[in-house]
Each structure stands twice: as structure tokens, then as C-alpha cells.
Length: 169
Image (cartoon, rainbow, N blue to C red):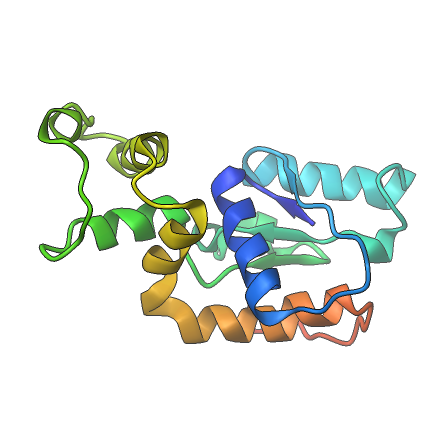
């Protein structure tokens, strides 16, 4: 499974662990880079087959790519989550969120790119496990993410390639 970055990998892994077990195939989730790089690698595998047979490789993009040309590629799906970092920022900004970063760390976050910086600093501080971070960030979209896992990931992992692209492509 090709994904954009480590944050997307965390979400996909949690969806597999939560909604697709047991799986009997080995799964490798590769962090490739941006959406363009993910789709490029998928295309190169399609023509050269160097990662795995074509039917064994899919791309999962962040939901913020849903309207891009990248999302229209065969075997490419978009999660119903724009980005984990953005979802975590929204959760963190709620007044009842705990535990919080130390005030000096929080104050040093940049205004531009705050979501990524906050996510990175929070993970570095070790205040919650990666699984807990994904859980709290994804809670508002839990039903949509479960549907995505059941309609895209589970069929792919069982090699039942009958999953339709809509509405996730």
C-alpha cells in the first residue's frame, strides 16, 4: 500500500488493525512522499512490476487530494480524512483536550504549517502513543473511516478486487 507520508501510514495501519484483522497476507505500507510521487510510483509499478504484481499494489492518498487529478488514477483511493495532522490540530484546539504541550513549546509553533508542526512536536513529546493520537484525531470521522476500511482495505487485503472506487476514489 503506497501512502504519502508517515501520518497516512499511521492511519492506514490503524484501520487495518481495527477493521481488517485477521489478514493472512503480508502488508507493507510504504511512505512515498506527496501525492504526485505516490501516483508516479504506482504507475511505474504498473508498467514495470518491480514492487509487486499490479493487483497487489494500491495507493491511498490523504482526503485533501480527493479533487485532484491524482485521485482519478486506477487503484488510487482517498481516505475520508483530509490529513491526520489537520484532524489532530482540530482535536488539540478543543478546550478540553489533554494532555497539552508545555506552554513554551506550544507558543513556538509556527502560524503557517502549524498542523504539521503541532503533530510532530506532540509525537516528539510522547504525551500519547501514535495509536492514541490517531484515535483522538479520527474520532469525528470514525464511521466514515470504518466504511473506507471495509470497502477498500478489507477487499484489497483479501485480494477480492471487487471493491468499487466510489465514493473513496
